[in-house]
Image (cartoon, rainbow over all chains, first blue to last red; front, top):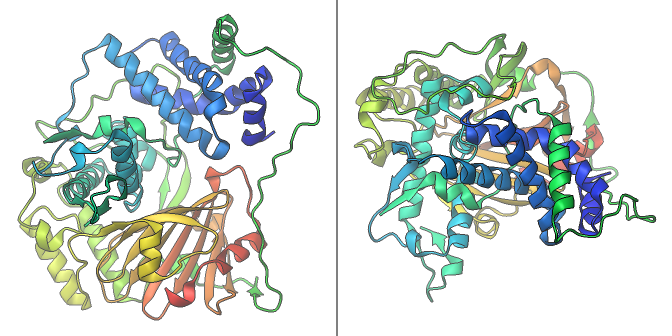
Length: 190
Length: 331
């Protein structure tokens, strides 16, 4: 059975389909959850968050398309894990999480959906391995040392590439402008 | 104004990173999930019976072989990946972490409660140039810079001093990892030695329509987005059917330092193929990755097909059909 077929069954309330997705993606989802929680909670709590991801899948199935289920699951896993962290701890941003944009940058005035689209395009247009390093650090919340082990790279190189990624991001976000006519949904980069 | 990168990531979805998966208790997770689902008052109608006559969803890649136009040579040859590597590493254990710089704000390395598999594996890997073969100035320059960078500021002292702020070198060297005069001098030395120009300091991010308006269609039956420099060097990430790919076109005569990590060369089957557009390319195929390599007159083009991220498989014939979709003749 493939994902598209299973999703069709899931939409009709078929629990075998839910079990299919759990069998296929529980290790991946559990990895994303662990990555964000970074050992700050018990194994049971982490497993519960993982289970909640699939419950969310069950409840949201009607609105989903099969094109990128794995991406959807990673987003939900990340979101639920961050939510759990914030419920339990005061999560302070690190210095490297913050970008300082120009005061006249229009990025901050955009709708959240537009901000996400622009950010996604910028990150996905980064060259490798910078893109993967950036996603591992900021999306999967892996530490530099974990990234270093998994990507078999020197930690100093990883920090350098993260810095370069932030620089590129800052430059692009500062230079987002409007097409003539002022349509925010057609923002382009200068 | 300040933006938090981590918060900005809340609304994107990613499945492109190949994470090393932890061992989890699927049975326990399933038990918890099913209990919550069945206890939910808004639960859908429960059924454990598969519906009959279910629709079979077949994911397939359209194979567009044009008889008489594709010339295939499966004979072994000595070129290809061997002439692109910067060196092959035997990885048998995780790299030793150097001492952190004072004041480093790296996230503490807390233990993971789930049994994970972060130990190093014993396998070969290689880094390959995306600029040209080993006898080209572009390859030699990229190799020299990457070797310098890997051994420079290994304790992060200079980088920590610079921090997140713009530097005086950004204007000229913004396309490279330069944050000290020593690094800038090295770049100048390399470009003079190999008679190469620098990329403009910034690149332009662009959607598919803009890229195609400027460069023509890069690949048929594909969607992609990416960026380009003023000199015409470009990179896109995209989808072709079920598969993710990256395409990088590096213009000759420019210092470019991007490289690609691949598995050991022995994992790949390699052969030459003349595409429908009449360009002879090198193709390399392993279980998880495919590479198309074209040494064109004005540029060097590499397509990185990320096969391991798809449920579908790729045969040699299908990979050749995919190569036919790439407009190597105009790149």
